[in-house]
Length: 301
Image (cartoon, rainbow, N blue to C red; front, side):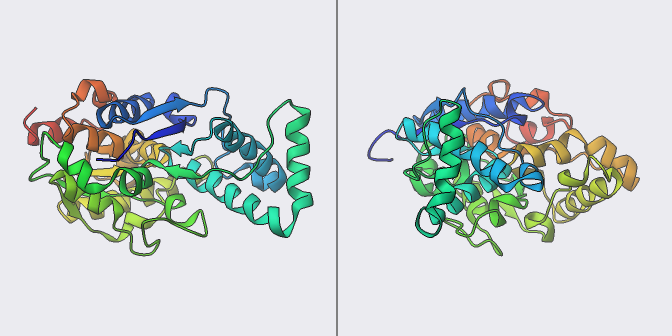
């Protein structure tokens, strides 16, 4: 167990408070089960999901410097359960920390905009950390294994890392961006069997869905088909946006590829919380588009 209570400034993001509210619900339930304290950043704004920089990198940096500054005010790491938010905010943090040395006038410019809005300045004094990194690096897999009350034996889990968690930043803690193992190691600590397949580190297709939905759904369908072919009982993602494309839009994916899929998609927080004894209804597993009942039945619920 960690030597002291872990505490984070929690950045829930947009999707987990809107279309996928069960993911915010499950992250909070998991934190309670592990004794992790989350201080929600209620004044935080959308990270931009990588779209702000298409118009203005300065806009992306300023908006997310403000988000990071909110965590700095609490003297806490910023915790997100979204791969996209991690990639965007984490990269901004990396960029601004480097600019403090190489281009301090740029950081002054960003902080000038924040000052005009009455916001605290960005200082570069904290870290941006995904839930996965917090579980692996801060809490520890051995400590998580000790908390397991319902082993996920005989459950075959296919990790879907997606893009941003692995390639959004220059430095990726606790993992190899080309051959990641952190989620698979989490699965093993819960008693589950990891399923390896080619698409686990590729894009889910979400960024294409607004202007090229057929191509987006074909991408998602390819990944889901591969996971099923390898024997997966479920797909597990650390990203609400991936969850949207892989779960919420799976019926549309099926129409595009003309094949029935029916693979349950869980967020990382939901899977871990199940193993810690949290009830399915507390994790919003009844809100999924693809029924999670096959997974729950396999676990004896």
